[in-house]
Length: 252
Image 1 (tube, one colour):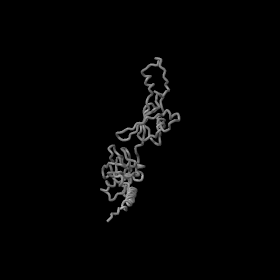
Image 2 (cartoon, rainbow, N blue to C red):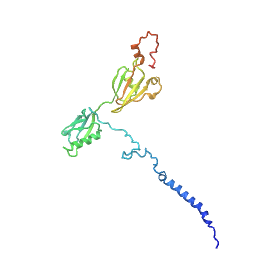
Image 3 (cartoon, rainbow, N blue to C red):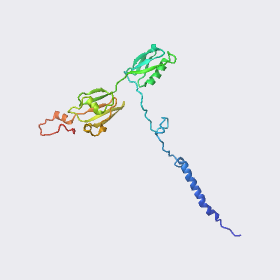
Image 4 (cartoon, rainbow, N blue to C red):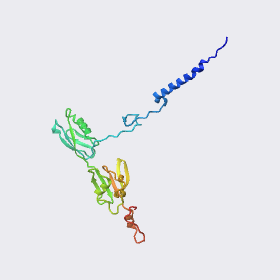
């Protein structure tokens, strides 16, 4: 009995291998997350804003636009009750953040927006009224301001009434003195414990260059205009020593 070679097996092996390879490639295309274990597909932060939940710290937090005004001490609010006008009143936020309300005592409203104040007062007056309707308006508030200090005509605090740049703020303070450097410092408080300082060269700006140096002021900002070194130098060194310095140079 003769044995016939199994020649059919080798002829099928390439087809099987090609089928396995094709299936693997198709699976990789349809399920890329399973192929690259542990690697997350890129997310679109703009279309998927952070929800702020636990485990979501890898996404940036979107800033709120057009944020409402938060009450400060010395702000004055007008409180009206359309259905109970006898409770109408005006209240001033005290230094500790509280206001004293008619018939219900004191509640703290510092740091709140007006809609939040309305809700807080509804809770407070819910003890004496049934489902009170309350309107709260901001009658007076702390005006935004900026401060200019140093070598300017009139150092002091000024109201920030409109969009004001650093150069305009110096002009409001009666401009630079002859002893002033045109390289100034802009201080901006970022948090109660952190101050941001920018050094701005206004000399080029005064000559029509580098307009980006003329940044916009924000409420509470302070500009400090330092004194030229030559001015300090003159106080202690006489000028009969043969030294020649240019008083108009901003190098000092």
